[in-house]
Amino acid sequence: MKEISLYIHVPFCKQKCFYCDFPSYACKEGAMDEYVEALCKEITKRCNKYIIKSLFIGGGTPSYLEEESLKKLMETISALEFKDKAEKSMECNPGTVNRKKLEIIMKGGINRLSFGLQTTKNELLKKIGRIHSYEEFIKNYSLAREIGFNNINIDMMFGLPNQNLSDWLNSLDEITKLNPEHISSYSLIIEEGTAFDRLYSEGKLSLPSEEEERDMYRMGKELLISRGYHQYEISNFAKGEKECAHNKVYWQCEEYIGVGASASSFVENKRIKNVDDISEYIDRVNRNISISEEVYENSREDNIEEFMFMGLRMNKGIDEQEFIIRFGVNIDSIYKRLIDKNIKAGLLIRNEGKIYLSQRGIELSNQVMSDMIL
Image (cartoon, rainbow, N blue to C red; front, side, top):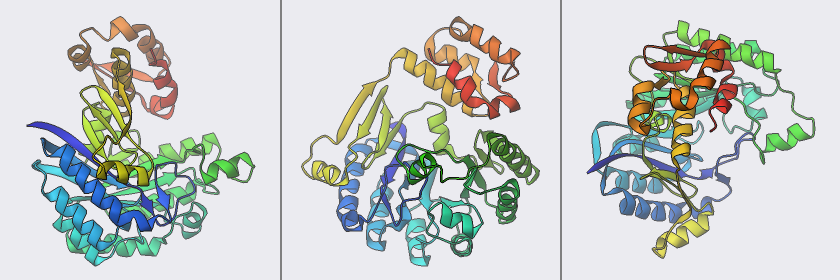
């Protein structure tokens, strides 16, 4: 049986965060039970011919599901065949978990939790549309530890409205004292169609300057490294061997199945996207007809670009030998001029068969990536 990674999408939220452009919805709780029924059918139908090497349940807020729906989802997942010691992650938002839910999640085999915290400052949490307080997060995190979860990620964000450098560094300082195994550190991006996009266009969003945001990134990284975390990707830091195996599947352009409304897959060189609408998704699954709304076969150029974009996100960068194995040509036959240009600009480093971003290159990564478009 072929090994593959699995992403499961749960599109429900108690409240939509002001920055979020993910396919997730508030005020649709009435569809939860039917959705989970359909989701479990899709999982069983599409995944029972594979060995699952990593799992990520995301959203939305998977932990917002009612206990019975959560139990059904866990039972369906438990029936799949997993690779030995496979990483099985699930996103949890503070304010949506309790002891019973965490016990169901652990019994279902989930061995890694990802808490979306973003900031320790309650005033900032309200300003970005989060439903919880920092104190609620601490209770949920402590409960997860008590129940036995020993691999926890915490998502943090910088560049938030009215956030200064001191706020950001104080938040990271507090979080590292909790000693999570993994910390994701993302900058706020104003995405089209979000509440923040509207406020920004109306001039009502006070954001840090580009220079302040770079200071937040650089000094935040230094703080995390000083506390024993190693950076392995632009926004991700881990202790020891606790790098996120599932996300590395994306960055290494490996195959994965995505199930649920809006979920995307990359299988046999095809990018497949499921329908967005929850009701339509449920209806199509129940009528046993295709749930795909887009199927795109990657060209050779697509695969080369994606290999470069995603590989350069990781600190280890691009392996020149792997490039030859995948594409049958030396990387210089396509990118020599652009690689040399970025090395000269101090943005790329080439050493012992690897090409990777310099520290300055990480800060200007979008500029480097745009050069890789064929």
